Image (cartoon, rainbow, N blue to C red; front, side, top):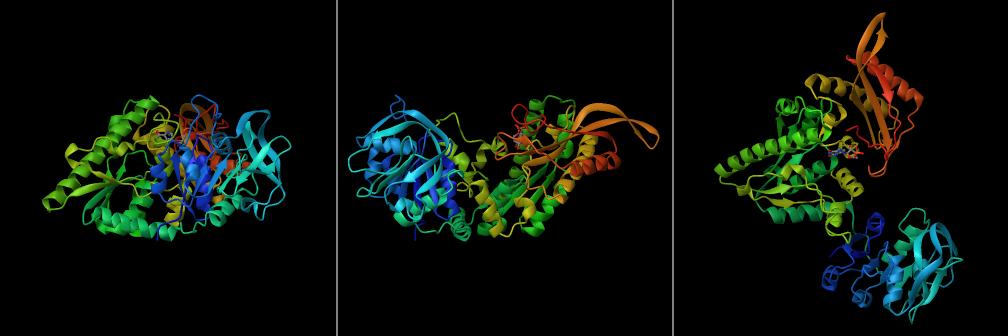
Length: 519
Ligand code: XMP
């Protein structure tokens, strides 16, 4: 049986992905397409329902995003949200105008007509609004279902099975938003709640099996959640015909190279080729102090090492009469959406730097088992695959690793000092139960020496900054108000346990204007 699908047509709202995530939270599969998607593509997905998202434009703008109005007559229920309501109104013969009182933020909506969309919801609802235009005249056949004191808040034409709301049910500030989306997807559209981790794992494993046949694949591991979950899923399908490559670039955290190998091999049964190239990286980094140059050096070196290893595996398989034809990547759904969004080609997919320079004759085909998933779903799948929390809940760690946390030159000695300090920060944050509450927490080694006194001895040693931030997505962040006790323990442990550091400072800069990393 096909998975029930709800198609969301994106008119450019910052909340579009949130609509998809909310619907998936109650186990209904949802797909985001640009509003310009051809009707045939929408029909091809056999959707149970279609949602028209919000968007920043006015329907009267010359370049206003448009969907094929035929989606309104496809015979499946339609829900318009914000701009979606205005698009429906405009295209079916109603009137949309600039609102005399624009509504942004909290608003109260009163339900004035019975409709299955509002079934079980209170007559007065707290909602979240964000619009400058409003529906002034409804198209024929539509009735007003809800309003605020200023404007139209809900309309419906039940004969044509079209509903629309001016507010945003997908944002948490709209208290009954989830219920409203459930009413639409489950009751009105009749979607099945069959988008479950077990279902995803089973269908992905079957698909990868069919795709790869008896072929071989390689996968670069970073130790982070995406590449690990992707590798475990593919290994479920093709076993040890998947070879994972894990590179020590010399700027990993303390013991990470050995710990990740152990977890991947013993814990997850993956076939891992671990390559210790730390000397090679550190040699290339000698004398480099510019942050962007550090990134470039590490990126290029990574490609070179990955290619060397991939070539070895490729050659070995070839001489055994086999061929490595596949490369596994942990691409996630937000990247897939971005690459085809109405925002246009400027928001192109982020390229994983580890595939940049693979030898041409390898001609690897991509397996992207996570390309339908959001980050939180990847964690859910990882949990169902029995992967350890230590991987699933790991804080983000930048590709160039500790190199962008060592200001000035990166040397083996300075990496060693920072690894010790970093370990203490992570330990103490975990002990205080804050590891999952903060987005990232780490130490930074500054190119500043200062005077101290230890056991009657004068010291002249390095300064370390502690950074802990709270964030939703890393785009903006606020410094975390860590309890003084935690800061006190971190500071005293670093100064007494880490040779080479005699002073600790706490970074209280938000992003913007700062960035999360120091380089
Ligand atoms: P910034 O420092 O720009 O960081 O506020 C935002 C998020 O991105 C991570 N970051 C990187 N990740 N390669 C990566 O893979 C990089 O060069 C890089 N620079 C920053 C950073 O850790 C934070 O989560």
